[in-house]
Length: 234
Length: 110
Image 1 (cartoon, rainbow over the protein chains, first blue to last red):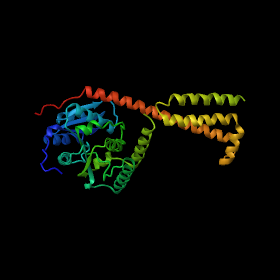
Image 2: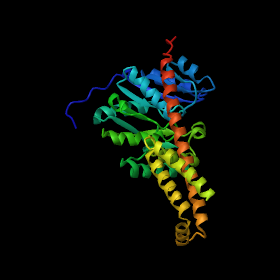
Image 3: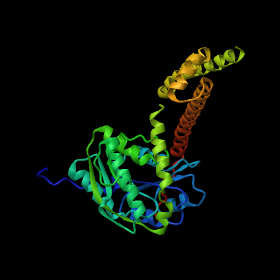
Image 4: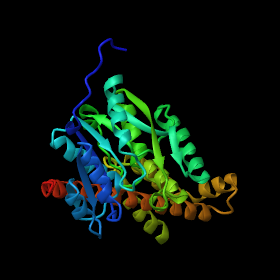
């Protein structure tokens, strides 16, 4: 698009937002890996009953603790707000269950810079996923179709927790869906901003741990209900 | 007559309540007002209710009114649910502010 090579941003300007609820078993190595790569990390401890917050703090993350459990959407919004307060130039959302690869973050940030986009959305269907159960694939395909109908966004993956946004992009996000419906709400808000987005292939590693934390069919019904209910009140 | 007056008072109550909710949940409010108005109409003109009931395949006008009442209850239940959601949003805002005010920065690496 442009003739000159865009400058790669300093990793210290990138804040990684990790929403965590009872993730003491896995959060330490994930934070350490991110910190080692030079990123700033904020773990939003969403009212965990275990030592998630302390472990994340020792591993080098800033920790913001919800006194009560609110849900992943609320935790991400808190993390985004914190990152913006810390003068983040880029904000990345990253799942705490270990299914994302820290190496993919640089590709998301590069995509933002190269395409001059406000949002870079990870896609496991452009990239790859290992160990995805067929039921999960079907559910994700249904969500992709629904997103297309509701927001007009033609995406290949709509429920991928790995995303990057510029400071301007992050500032335009205001999640009200506290629980799982936030992923769809985020895409609605991205579509409403009119700012540009780009999809980036990423790899998802499904482990027994991450599948245990993942969504079930009944959750998707709850998401549909939450999204409809929000349209009925201010 | 007594039943009609009692029902009318209740439905008028629903009507007023729905009106006061208009700013917060316009869709629910308008729905409630429509159903409550229809209820009032049929309480005083049960013949029309009977005719309409026959038209839509419900046995008696009274049955139709009972169904209308059930619908009103369900709408009010939904409204209550939406109110709880608004409360949850307020709690979220408060929780977030408390969390951000008490943020702990990374411990220096050893």
